[in-house]
Image 1: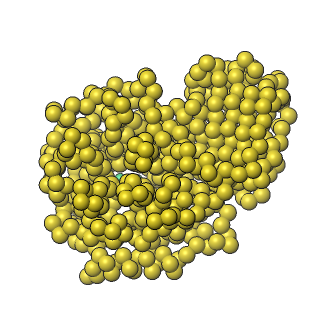
Image 2: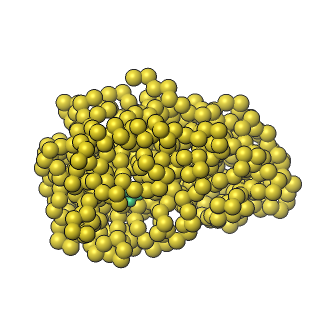
Image 3: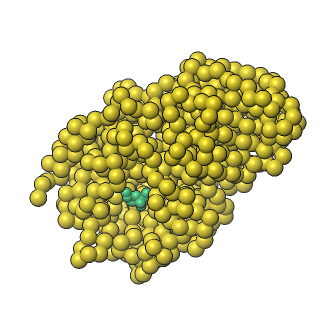
Length: 501
Ligand code: FRU
């Protein structure tokens, strides 16, 4: 059997060999994070440590399909420009070496002596049954990780919890102790009941089960994947991605109050982090100023009702990107607000500003240096527009996607069904329009669109696969004349590896 170091070397060589088919790249996002080649899913081990942001991720360096999970690794000094690092974790031990398993999702913390701890789910098969245990890998330099000889550190679960579905530990520090939340299922992810478990530890090696933190049936579906638990102000926020929950939400949150003495979380408010089809397994970290930042995998799984495929980007030798890092804040009513982190503003160039724009039913073309990677901010009031607005993006006259905002019905609809042969999504969501005002911030990046409405109370993320000539951008009303109060359009440059270490 090869050692972990040999497996890592082999994986790094595979990445270097695969490279990317740059000539043909039409869909690879310019400023959303993608792996150098191969398959990517969940963000893992997000942490700001020793002046650098670390983004680890579920990675198959050998294929554009999911399998044999490794942890890819990249670092950034500004959450915008990322630099690839060698693969951090590879399957190499009896507890994690498995083509349909490997090193599954998990998190990172920095111990007092500066050691970086990764805690991940090892997935293996024993006597034909899938077994998930929680394991550690340690690093002094933040680049080379060694698996702990005493792994696994958690292999027993409370009664009824399926050993095949206990995964995605997210560790955090609270009141001088380590805690972790773990996704779990009683009865298994096919038709069981999802749970979030809480454990605690004094040294990161020995863990004790405390409580079932959350198990609300409707919200949890059959399995709670990738839970996270963090404080904002005097509230605690639990996030996770439920499998097969009612209404098929992809990422939910529950805010409330937490009593660590009893392990009881009293849920108060809940909602969805994103209403689009392509936002899954978000994980959070604190940025250098203490703000909570969320990053998610921008895709979905085949068990989701609307799923057709993972998209055609395998022809470019990559599959999967991360959503933009989003700042999380809590409104007075306990609902969350998400907004792209401010650092992304440094990608902007060639801005075009509009004020008091007269619009009618004829599309008004907006000119942009780059109609494939840009940001579009818009402000309007129901006093000045009586019907609906239609924003067209990625338009070549025949194919395009639309974002329609019905200001009377207070509803936003993204329709990607006419955009390209792969996109089918049509998604509608309710808007609040506080003070009768519409605010929109839309980030478009080749095969990606992320929409933030109502100051980030509504988010909708979707992948598109338009052709290169779909660069037109326009706006019109869907009935009558109106005035759009403000618009800003920015072309956005490619992010790159400019990390100062
Ligand atoms: C979520 C997930 C996790 C698991 C990982 C495997 O997308 O299914 O629960 O750890 O992906 O790649």
